[in-house]
Length: 215
Image (cartoon, rainbow, N blue to C red):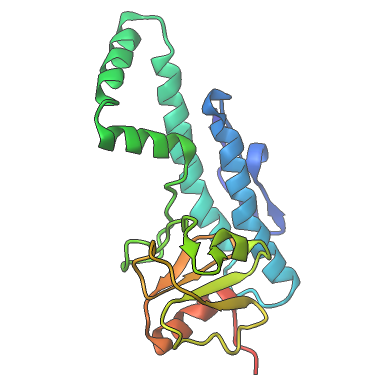
């Protein structure tokens, strides 16, 4: 197992197996590479289309490198568990018993599948920085609205606006019984960039990920 020290050097960006190499256990390297692509793809598109805020491409390394390091630690632990010595056997038996606890099972499953990846976007709502799960809306499913690869404001209040960013962010007024938040701003990779209901607060956060307003 190994990992590149930097995921970006000037115009060169590394992703997938070029950035990190893992044993095939659980397909974690593949999952990690797909996540790299989701994180990097929309940021490159923002640069090409001329609306990327300063430092957006640098955020790729800042967000993805720590995730890759954690997965490397996880795969090393799994390799240890596959050993044939008495210590590895004892660890497997202990883990098997611990997996009977729901919280442990959920944690280990999330660690292997990487669905619980959360980026550090500061303090705030529990959804902030995490990847938004698919939820049902009155007019379909949330993930169906994200196929265009744009930002998305899911507004349950009907009082917010993304005027100035409409060429980069879709504004959907809809409600979900599964979402305990007045409104969420999603990056194109599905991570929650903002949660709230205050228009001024929203306008203060939009430039961080979607650049300067137009008009």
